[in-house]
Amino acid sequence: MNKRTSLLTATMLSALCVAAPVRPAMAESAIKLTLDTLFEPLLADPLEPRIAVMPMLGKKKLQLDIGTSADLYQNKNKSFAVGIDFATWSQLNRTSNFKFPVDCIDYLFGINTTFRHQLREKPLSFDEASVRVRLSHISAHFEDGHTDENGDWLDEALVPGGKIPFTYSREFVNVTGALSAPGRRVYLGYQYMYHTLPAGISPSSFQAGAEIGLPSHAYVAADFKLLPKWNWEEGKTNGYRGTWNLQAGMRLTSIGLKNVRVAANYFSGMSRQGMYYYKPESYTTLGMIVDL
Image 1 (spheres, rainbow, N blue to C red):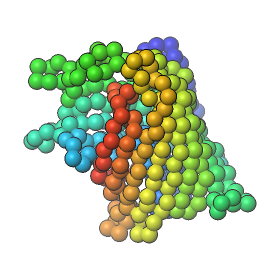
Image 2 (cartoon, helix red, strand yellow):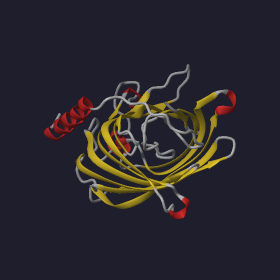
Image 3 (cartoon, helix red, strand yellow):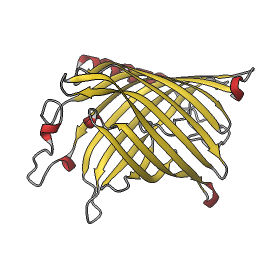
């Protein structure tokens, strides 16, 4: 572990030591994900901590996400909070006999703060503004599902540098601001990576999105990012590529499963998996999300 990562870890552990768990009572809404956070996790962002099983349609691959965000401290008027983020994002191969070898996996941990303010003038019919600031560390790894029958790495020549394993590690600050009202939300975000391995990756990325609640506990949501695009000739990122994730879903409240959603996603852009940071992808998933 390098000095930067050690410093980040120490900062996060210190924040956890001074925070106390608080579980607020908050009103239900069609697009609400969790009772634990002042800033509701973004519905269509594939890098939000969540619990989800999302098979890819037409491909023998499966996304398995395990994680959550939770506020450890909230002030009395619910305008400020300090919380934690833990998450894994896995890509698994689907094989016979109900086996799912792990191709790659990303690990994230971090701390966050949220500021929330009720709007009196209600611009554009929104009645609440919120800002979430995250300090996070993420690392990624190839696993046994990325090897052949002899245990050799697959497609080793196709990765930048032509060698597996390679170290993938990032530390970053992420700021997201949102305007919301019951059943709808819009947001903008910016992320700055102050340390990254491999080197040569642009430190900045940008984000925007919208969420709309529909009747019968259904919703639609869109997340758009400008992510650094890898240039093979220069051996570094050069410019940006738009990355979309469109989601439509429904909460199963009608059968007593209010914490369970079924959702369909269409993803197109730079891969969400750290091991494939250089690779554009396009696919559709259909599966289940459990909200804690």
